[in-house]
Image 1 (cartoon, rainbow over the protein chains, first blue to last red):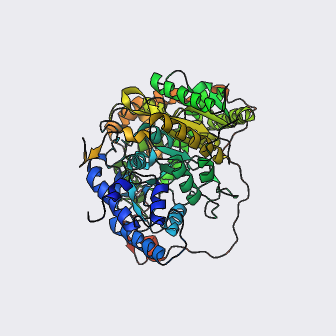
Image 2 (cartoon, helix red, strand yellow):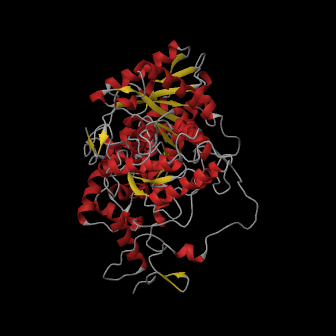
Image 3 (cartoon, each protein chain N blue to C red):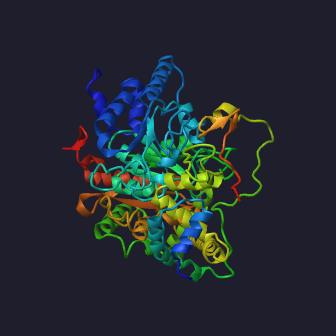
Amino acid sequence: MTDSTSTPDMIRRSAAAQAAALAAGETSSEELTRAHLDRIAAVDGDLNAFLHVSEEEALTTAREVDSRRGAGEELHPLAGVPIAVKDVVVTKGQPTTAGSKILEGWVPPYDATLVEKLRAAGLPILGKTNMDEFAMGSSTETSAYGPTRNPWDRDRIPGGSGGGSAAAVGAYEAPLAIGTDTGGSIRQPGAVTGTVGVKPTYGSVSRYGLIAMASSLDQAGPVTRTVEDSALLHELIAGHDLRDSTSLPGPVGPYAEAARRRDVNGLRIGVIEELEGEGFAPEVRARFTESLDQLERAGAEIVRVSCPNFEYALGAYYLIMPSEASSNLAKFDGMRFGLRVIPEDHPTAENVMKATRGAGFGDEVKRRILLGTYALSAGYYDAYYGSAQKVRTLVQRDFAAAFEKVDVLASPTAPTVAFRLGEKIDDPTAMYMNDIATIPANLAGTPGISLPSGLAEDGLPAGIQFLAPARADERLYQVGGALEALLEDSWGGPLLAKAPELAGGAAR
Amino acid sequence: MPSIGRDDVARLADLARIQLTEEEIARFAGEFDSIMDAVASVSEVASEDVPATSHPIAMTNVFREDVVTETLTQEEALAGAPDAQDGRFAVPQILGEE
């Protein structure tokens, strides 16, 4: 590297601080982008957070931003700050696989709406991040391209489905990343990697250009190292979109301002009784309780609330999600894009479809398509899919009743710290339990944030989750920003500073 | 609910147009009952008087202005196709022998 020695340190700063350094002329977007590309080259061979790195394109964008800045143009505050995008989001000209063999080598002919916004704001796109196949998983192990490893311990999972995005920001390969959250795929990876992730209110961010798993649950959002960075990215990617009929009209923000407010005096925080006891690891619970104590000392009021129907949320989710997925994934038929496998005998369209889907989909995708097909089949529809939709109403009613008493709800994000690679991959029902605390928000469409609560079992990070009413995302940034500041004061710096160094692809 | 066996899994795979090996059919059949048992509790609370929710935030009659917008070019639409001919998607024989 030819630039000053400050740039390698620069990648450890928050996105907001990197943006400030660009605005102050301390560094250029080209230097900053190159520093992140160098970091990816050094550590990603081991982590496997990226499925594709778009070096040329990122540097071209960076140079354009630098010259526009040099010409005195008014730029977006995040212009020139690089970003990584989960591979389930389509990017024109950059391969998009959703972690599946069936889309290997596919180059989308269009951009997702949120990608258009990133490009318009001048954020260099570093590449596409690894994920569970079609976002189906909680560990990134179902990726057809090998698992991503947790930067804290490379024998552990980074969460899922967005383990690649969380590991990329956690390992300083990118200051910002895009995730998607259908049942916790932004928040749970955040919790187990010591990073921050937000699932916005359903409809806050356009779903146009997201490869759908479950359309009524999917929502894209920010993956970052700080609460303020998530707020800045959320403000950039949110907004009404005519190309998504479920997109919410109305104003966006002010999220970054809320993240900087550092004031929880009088804020009523409800602890969800159903999401703190059985199944949650002792140290994960201890960090959760200590976080609430900090908020209470800062003036928040902590109360206990009951959401009795959350007990049924996991069951409802694992009926609704496969049902919608089985329908959404019907488009992968070997006809218009992606893989086509031609069987030797009777290569009719139907047999080509079967052979293509049999060869192109992995186990978890097949499992969920079969479950969804079953749940929607005649004779079982009312008992399964119909009942699950009723549970969805009951979960919404629980949220409504709770939010009459409190401003936000809280729980640990995930029941445990990161588990070991391979530990749960052969036990689908055990794997599904990882999402127990995150799923209710997807069923109800309400927003949620996860941020680090401290180190728990085996010295690994745990997360705390806050949930707010639909369209009240601002409250998440307010409480998240305040708690982050309180905890970092007590730790003497960010939690990620305690992670082992990665160098040359190996932990030192 | 009835138990789900190998024949049921094979039938579902056929409906979903997924070719499975005998080994896969056996494995999925072995897992199916425990997964369905884990989710079947939803029927305990889904009484007659509870309305169903299909979308988290209900919206009705979402329209845009009926004006021409940008679309993919023919070339772009065909760019990712496994096979194309004369500006069209080329697909295998659609009808079987029988």
